[in-house]
Amino acid sequence: MVPTTYPFQPDYAVPPGWVLEERLEANGISQAEFARRCGRSPKFISDIIAGKAPVEAKTALQFEKVLGVSANIWLGIEKRYRLHQMRETEAREAEASEDWARSFPLNELIKRGAIRKSSSAGEKVTQLLTFFGVASIEAWTARNKTVAVAYRHSPSFASNSFALAAWLRLAEIEAEGQALKDFDRAAFMGALKQARRLTREKFPQAFVEARQLFNEAGVALVCVKPFPKTPLSGAARWLSPRKPLIALSGRHGSDDHIWFSLFHEAAHILLHSKKGVYIDADKSGDNGDTAEAEANKWAANFLVPQPAWQSFLDAEDYRDDDAIRNFAAEQEVAPGIVVGRLQHEGLLAWRSRLNHLKVRVHL
Image (cartoon, rainbow, N blue to C red; front, side):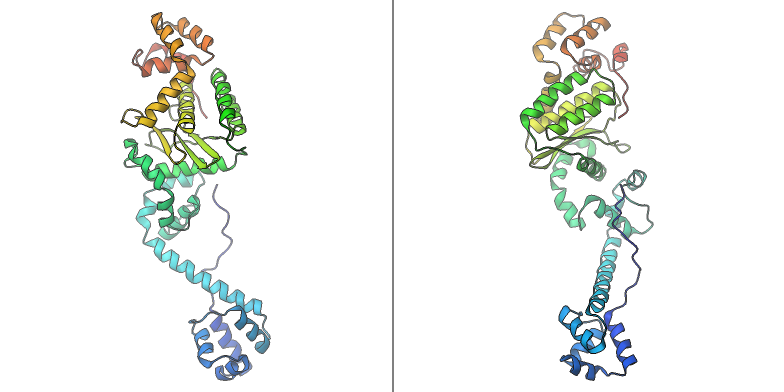
């Protein structure tokens, strides 16, 4: 995943004025005489030699005629020198931004191949900017304004906002590799109905099939391992007006949690603004966030419609292993989803003996 856009770059560059001065000495031409031959002022030639004035295309052609050295060579020397100067300036600015770079989970990003290991603070900043696809920290801040709103709605990320931004970027990069059609709401609803039945199938094939269905409907679906100490289940956002992204972390490693997270994020795509970034943390929906509460309700009722759910509860045998299996089969969902909802509603303990109906999953 590490960008491969950095060919060998020497840590020095010769200013064109140095080359010009050496050439004049070798040819026995004074600066004043050279200026007359070029039709330029002595001060202008002096400024080029001192590095104060650049060698532009017209000047390079004049040098070519007088000295017999190609204009392309003069322009190449000038370009390399100015680029080197700018890199040095950016490196000094990056060194001063080391605290920003340290805010990210650098070791994890290195481990995942997102950036290279570096002892230079400036290089760390540069690699992070390249990873995020921005030219400056200011541009990164502006691009992440929407994400910053999501931070404020997720108390769990009060001290992990940079880790969250990095995780979202990893998801975005993975999504870029998926071939998508333009988003089609009707097709997406159809994909969700098929994905609902896939909850009864085995991982990881069921997830692969769900991703294919989503891609056909114009939705990117990815799973990115969460960073340590980051209580994240998933996220939803629109990468463009026609390209929504659903990202899952697989953090809890059980089929009910992964499937519920998928449908929860799908609800955000269907119900909420394209400008938002919706973060599903462990406490989502419990902190007064209306959008998260709506997504929870939509996902629960899509997986198991409320009338059927209420009838199941009224039968008062919902703690029975066979009753759960039979009800799940009738609804065409995995038994673990039924167990998970019973636990979420406080009808079963989280350490219930019925947890064996959940399937451990590794995406």
